[in-house]
Image (cartoon, rainbow, N blue to C red; front, side, top):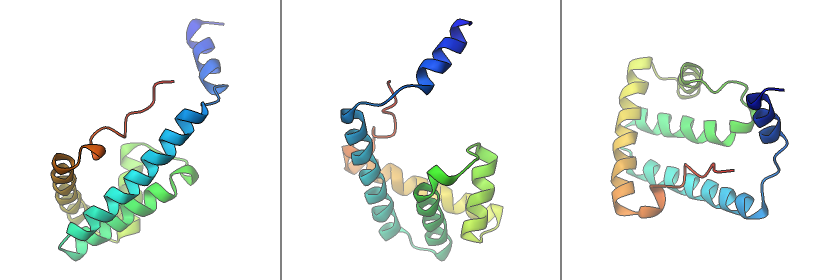
Length: 117
């Protein structure tokens, strides 16, 4: 077996530690808390539809077979009922809300990137 194959097999057989599972669960709670805070800051119906689609997407993340950028965008469009232009504008506004929250609360800045196995 090549080294890349061995690494792939090793990662596949990996069982995360209890610490990792606890941190991942805590991060998930923070993520949904952040979504709710963003939802409270949204003004337009399009932004609300977009954040609701984001929340639904993250709640069903384990059920999704696709995770490339285009497929996620199409799924978001279907969930929200918005046109691509409306969805893009709403996502940009939500991104601004996220950046503002990130400045205010340090907890939201780094919880996405705990993947060091």
